[in-house]
Length: 197
Image (cartoon, rainbow, N blue to C red; front, side, top):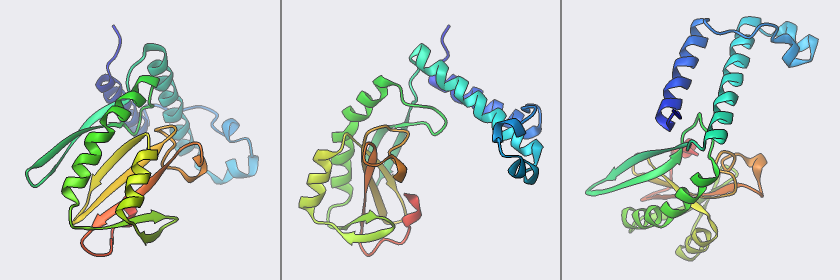
């Protein structure tokens, strides 16, 4: 029997709880840090818990690769009378090769939903924590270049990430240019909740 995506999520959650309770601990975590002066400044119990979690998570990721277990979970977003069911990679799992095809296949549905719910709103692009106005032409160009699209909804603000590369790395600046996301925001007035990205 191969564990499902949901099984792996539950196993990871149980393991995290066990680690936080102190039921799981990595002995000799100081050897993992490798810098004696840093090791002396850190709480060994907490460090052991962190490494125990990290090791277990890596085992789960290896299991995913070996058994082709998807890291995708499905989320529903409702805005007014419109509803979208979209795939995303669970924060504790990795994307296996077939997951990227699922993300790509959902791109147009995400974009269609975005266009419908943002009609009449102003568009901005967020680059290095700075907002700049975005034209519809620029939005269309970014949409064409992206491999997949991610969507989130805030209070009167709608967030679209047009992504490429590795789904687990695309949100980190260090991954550019191989992986990344163009971060777009639609709102009636200048966006206020930029920490969603």
